[in-house]
Image (cartoon, rainbow, N blue to C red; front, side, top):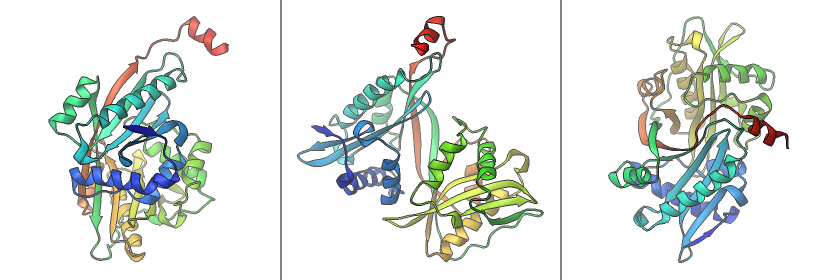
Length: 319
């Protein structure tokens, strides 16, 4: 097996692999070329991504990212080649990379590696269990096929209107952070990082962002984008601030986005959601006519337990 780093010329082959892995389990895939381009733009491909080949064919792919002590690995194997050691090699590569990153996490902070998979058969369960991972969370990819223009829902006292860029950018950032503060694994994103993440991407389109406004207050928000190859509308973020929940605001924002996607010619719209969200997000999407495309399980392996920093830790940080 040949293992190397990907480059731009591998994009089509890697995308084909990722879609094939999804389709084998879910019957469809929401991976698009524009999303993979965006993913690679955020990675150091020479350090945090791998292509695995057999006889010149791309049969495996993995990438690695960090968020504090939370380390993430994402891996794909050609479906018909499961059980040939490709997944084991992906785990070895990503765990080695995780060990390198562990020293960069502040002393005392917990360090753990996560990997999500759509496969939920006994082979997958055993694969992760034998390597010290445990299932910790479920996520869903949801989709709707639009046959006619949706009628946006209305909420008394709330105006659903376009986001005003860039005048509302910092207010929007604050509302986004508050809306997700109670969600699983949420880490606050500083303004500079948030601005770069959202406004710096090629698919950023402020005309696909909306605000649920209570006068001058932002009660909720939605970020949308159009993905290409294959074409698909996508809801990146849908959030409502805690004080405004249970009023139908999320459904109003969602159907507003659906209506605009339909107007632009998109007949398929997708999103990802925490299947165990305490806000009941999955039910909101189902009421709006969405169905589950895939259900992923997040597996986690602890690399370092949390503890109180010692004097030795402080001394190392100073040197």
